[in-house]
Image 1 (cartoon, rainbow, N blue to C red):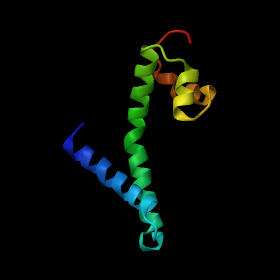
Image 2: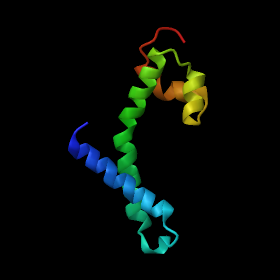
Image 3: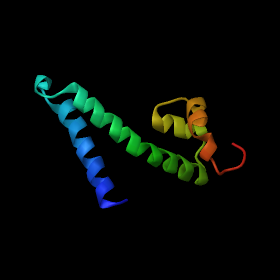
Length: 89
């Protein structure tokens, strides 16, 4: 990962955490925090796919992946099956 991408991830993560941890959220703009959250999720989406693919290669079932992500195995399969390089399951 490039230094620039790491800095973007860090800045967006810090913005979201600052909103979440701040007792006085009136001082922070929710729309700016929402924007930081959206940028963070966009940057992290490819990582989710890589982790799912690696998990499948190492023998994880769709049930395991769904459970790890807090979603059903069907939702996990629908979202990530196109990157699955393991035959069957």
